[in-house]
Amino acid sequence: MPTLTIRNLDQAVKRRLQQRAATNGRSMEEEARVAIGEHVAVAPAGNLYDTLRRRFEPLGGVELELPPRGPARPLPDIFDE
Image (cartoon, rainbow, N blue to C red; front, side, top):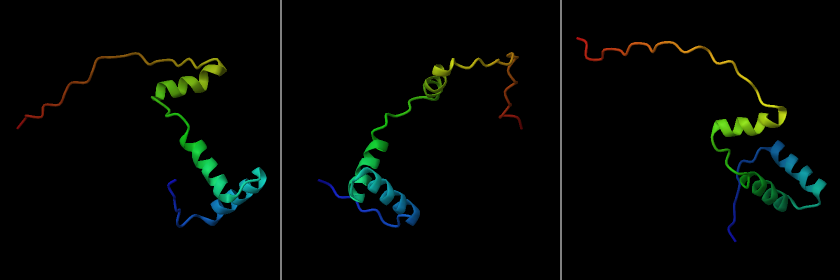
C-alpha cells in the first residue's frame, strides 16, 4: 500500500485533525485517510449550470430576468494602417 508523507502541516490543522480523530475514536492516521478519502471521493462538479441547478432546484429554482439583446458591436479593423 502506498505511503504519503505530509510536510509543513499547519499546527491548527493538525490540532483539528487530532480533535476529529478523538471524537471519532480513530488514530490521527486513520482520520487523515478517512478525511482525504471523503474529499477525493466527491464526484466532479461538472459544468457550472449543472452545479447551480442542483443547488437551487430544491429551493424552487431562481428566475433571472435576462437583459434585452441588441446588435453586436462592430469588429475592430486589425489591418488598419
